[in-house]
Length: 174
Image 1: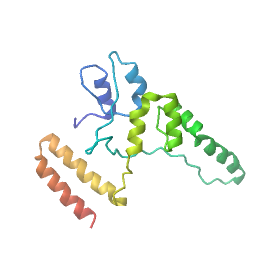
Image 2 (image 1 turned 60 degrees about the horizontal axis):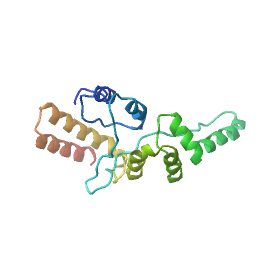
Image 3 (image 1 turned 30 degrees about the vertical axis):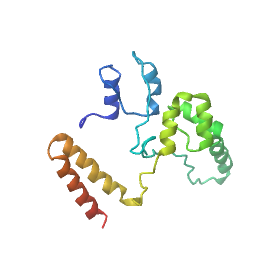
Image 4 (image 1 turned 180 degrees about the horizontal axis):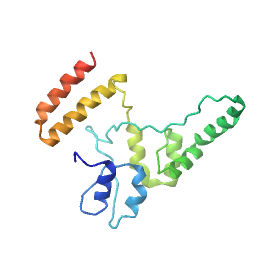
């Protein structure tokens, strides 16, 4: 779809008239409450296993503070949230975000085995700037998503759109 958002397509999936929806862990509860049976599979990779999806962007940030006496409490909060137990608590509180560490993932799976496809996806994930893209990632990404939109809308053939994207990406990263 070239005009729907991720939420729109998920709502359409929940009507029961669509075969599948691509989404994330934050939809676990709504999928479980659907009026029809649902399941989860990983997006298959080219060479088997899960496809290397791009990683997301949940971070714990501790800003510089004028009162450095607060750093002790800040440190305690960060340490609490980043233990395997803290990662599981954070994950289950905030829509099942998958912990970034193997220990946290294993602990999450002990309590929520149904999240295994997402844990597998995170374990197979690659950073958006991987493959030596670095700060050029947004330029390449824009060329690619523009090509997809052009092909889907019919304003260009797929070959023409991808050829244009290649040229634009090369020009933007020289």
